[in-house]
Length: 87
Image (cartoon, rainbow, N blue to C red; front, top):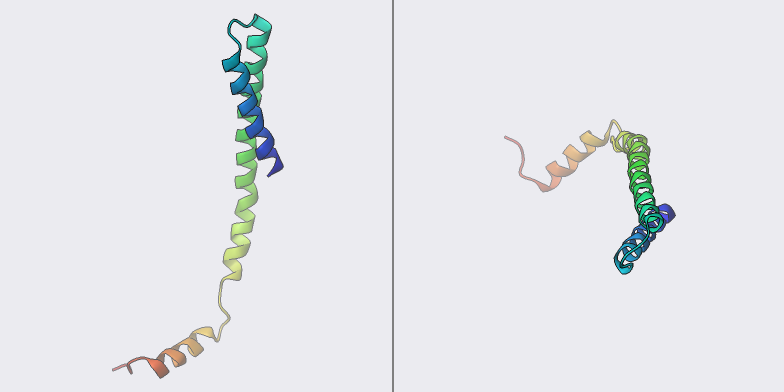
């Protein structure tokens, strides 16, 4: 979360520097561009690592959603109590 905030503020700072300077020198031009490339690469790596972290969590969550063995029998009994009897 903190890295996302830092990357967002870096992007805002780079955009501000790039738009406020009228005729910057070559050094002033290359620094914001270099930092913008680093921010973009950092964002890509961060999103990729978030996706990698998400896969095991999704698998663990999906396996924990399986109901116990007797659940379907109890569910059928409860539906039979309130529903229309089967023909």
